[in-house]
Structures are given as structure tokens and as C-alpha cells.
Length: 208
View 1: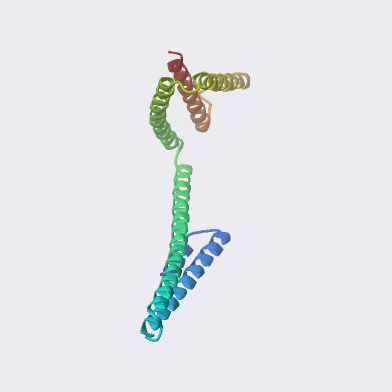
View 2: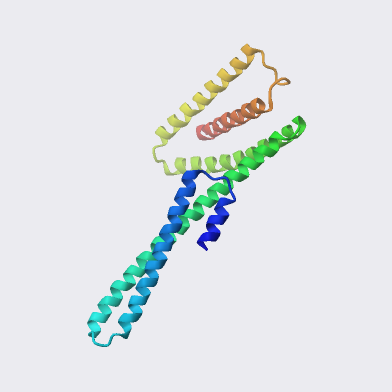
């Protein structure tokens, strides 16, 4: 099983540090399994001994059971950490594959991909707005630190509006037009605009 895990890990391009950590985990698991086997053999031999008293047998079995439980628990933790690391690596590989595919696309395909991402972010923004509105209503209803909350939201809204004004001024000075803007610039500008609108709407809700 450990060899299979190492073989599976070797199929991916992982860093030497991660390979070293995985090897350490595999070694630790092997040692724990060996200790578990040794303790099981000791328990079997102890059960065959008839000269010891019942109390001594119970004490020995209890200590042995604790050692077995500790060893098993440590092995489970190591396996869980390794599984989490694999999941993170899989997510990073999927994101990298998606970026590679996008780089190979034509300009029209890139625009379609970015439009799809913008639509996805818009849907996520709607969900966030709903949660924010519910949170606002809850805080107003409970009346906990209402003034401080209003001030913090007001400052955040003013800061976002200031940043949006600075961005518009920068675009106007440099003479950038929407037709000549790159896909990333349009995407970032739209997302920032949606964020400001979201906070502004939430502020209007709080004022009511």
C-alpha cells in the first residue's frame, strides 16, 4: 500500500520537499505498523502465560491497549495529512490545467471564457449580497454595536468609491478606451465596479 502511494505521488511533478515529507510519513506509518504487530505478539504471549495473577494481566492488557490506540491514532493522523496534501495538489493541478487551456485559446475564445467567469462571479456576488443583507437585518434587529457597525460600513463604502474614482481618473489620463482595453483590464474593472455597487447597496439598506 505504501509503495502504491509513493508510485502514485511520483506520477505528479511535486517539489523535493513534498517528496521528502511523504517519504517521512510512509516511514513513520511503517514503523507504527511494525510496533503494532510487535505489541500484538506480546499481548498474545502474555495471554498464554498462566503464572501471573489476574490483576497483573489486566494492568498489562490495559497499558498495551493504550499503546495500540496511540499508535493507531498517530497513523490515522499521518494518513489524513497526506490525503489533505493530495487534495490541495489536485486543486492546484486543475487550476494550472485551466490556465494552460486558456492560453491556447484564440482571442474570441478568451473573451468567452472571461465572460463565463464574470457571469459566475456575478452569481456569487448575488449570493454574497443576500448574506450581507441578512446580516445587516440581524445586526439592526439585535441592536448590537449599531453605531460602530454603521461607521465601519460607511468608511468602507467611501474608501471603495475613492478607489473607483482614482481608477477612472487614471484611465482618463492615459487615454485608455474600452475598445482597446485588454480582457484582463475589462474583467478587473467590472469586478471592482460590482464590488463597489454591492457595498453601496448594502449601505443604502442600512440607512433605511
